[in-house]
Length: 336
Image 1 (cartoon, one colour):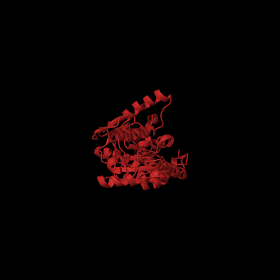
Image 2: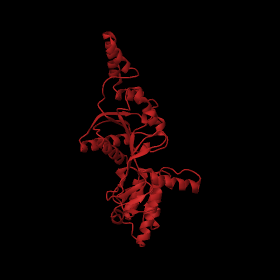
Image 3: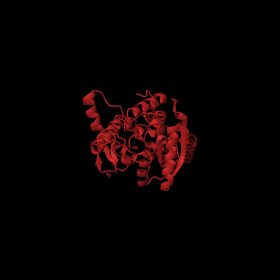
């Protein structure tokens, strides 16, 4: 147990290496991974860490978590294929939000699309009205609507009356510089932000809302503005089977990261079964495979320490999410 502290993680790794371990599973937090890697690298003991911080990967340390960069790449590529080329992004002002924006810029520059609007917000705020209002260019577009209504009322006549009726219920007038908006958050913050989008004139029937793996939870379709939105995440079928087995065994739902621990342990077991000898967990051995099928879909360990995962694209529904683009199935070897 590292207790979430880097000093304790360093001591735990030193003790494990001293006991002659061949592979370390964990820890979770990136500072603990950095601390544990010192003794592990010195002894050539690979680490399968459950962090999603790519900066700690490499030289025998594999980050086994879910990477937001890969999720952004997957959903944006799917959106591009559906004719979307102009993007906006709303993200928290923290390391996670900065990485999302960088990833969006990177993938759009590679695909000939563009990021035309970027807005950051304080994730510790409880009210996101102001940032959504600015993102929607609400004041200018609201005034444009009021001016148009006044103009039609002044002109009068049957055509003007019909035009005024079409504006009933409309909040703003004028286009936005993006066709899709990536909202890089989850949980209650996501629901709070999403509810503000139509209020400030971002029509989610016209602007496609996109998300990351943070959306991968039950119930987000309760917010009407998110219904029909797209996000990338591991394919849910295998994990649902795992969750059912877990609940049957332990009478409680598993933590979201439980599948990572399960897959890492299963991967180690496969290597032991097939190798049966000491030193089977070399970096070369761990990365030479064409991939594995785990409880979160296919994955493979890359020489740079990053875990490459096959992701699906899901569409948010009122009661459940639906796969609209299957995860790839090109990896041949299964660990289950």
